[in-house]
Image (cartoon, rainbow, N blue to C red; front, side):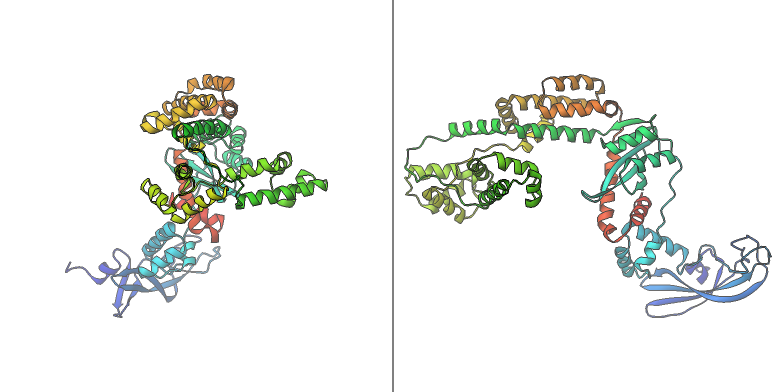
Length: 531
């Protein structure tokens, strides 16, 4: 260490000579002069022989402890003696220290570029201030350059969409599935853009995609020899949607079964004379009554369904349902649509206690009793329900019916992951509706094909589903038949869109961090540089 000079410590291994170091409170200025051989013209590459002049450049260097370091470098300007060269003079650049049009050392520029890649503009500028680095957000963003896209597509290419603005505008991300990195980003999700990219970048042998029509069309046009692989996760998602739709269509069976269980569990109480039941004046019921009057008022004026839908900002199916259904039936349906509150599981107990006591019951005592049973609501909710019972406006106690989404989650999960209670409740659902039972059997059989990659049994499964399955399951089977080759490959080959989905999540993180105030080009640059 004793033999090392100031040059070796501050600017090691570079052709410069340190002439002096000043001492300031927070800045460390370093005076240096270039000692390199005469440079070459950046245009004609001829080595210079004559010095034109000298001047001083100020370069920001990486901090040294708590102090900022500034290098005041004296460099030479040379003549270019080649007559055919358009450049008459040029300034020498010290390798490892200076670059053209840069006010920071090469090493510091690498630091700033890395910070900008990870954080973007304003967050990177805030971090630079904490690190005592001089860099603004615009300067940091100018350091970003998108890497060149390879002329050939990767052997296994993954494609998926991501939203610039959900429901409005979308882009496309292309991923090298084997390497797990993004190779390019497209500004939309149209088939023409993707087909043009595939034409310009040939070489994809396997293309992993979801079942988006635009991507299917583009692959057929631009890469007909590539093997298309439908993503297994999207297949299970579409199957789950079909199962849930089946459960929605058979809610009457589920409600009937739940009501039968409720009747058998609740003991029969002594009869009590209550006032006639009235519909409670809830917001949903009042809105239904007002909407019914408005639609029929316009129907009397011979308005069409489409015109009424535009006038009232409703769907045409909603207008048609209000036209063809009696008001009483609509009001009853609106009453049943009241959301389940914290009191709903305890209403049966309250009603039974109220009837047994002939209405002479203490609200405080009932509140304490249901609180011991697990009620976590307020006492005021219990008082309102008892007041509705005395006034005769309380609605009937609804049975504890399982939601279609919960039933679907039990069906889609492996059976050995269900608890004993969940397995028993799913068995009761299967006993309640044969269509749900059939959908459950088909869903579990298809999930087994996906998990064990038994694509050779897919066609047989489709035939079974098209014969005696519920309508949503038949529709799912029909979609599989239309894309049979890709689905079979997805259930046979080891490739999937898992790497693509992971990169889509990363794209969403970058987009939410900076896209609202940036352009597509900057977003694409950050996606590709971080890859």
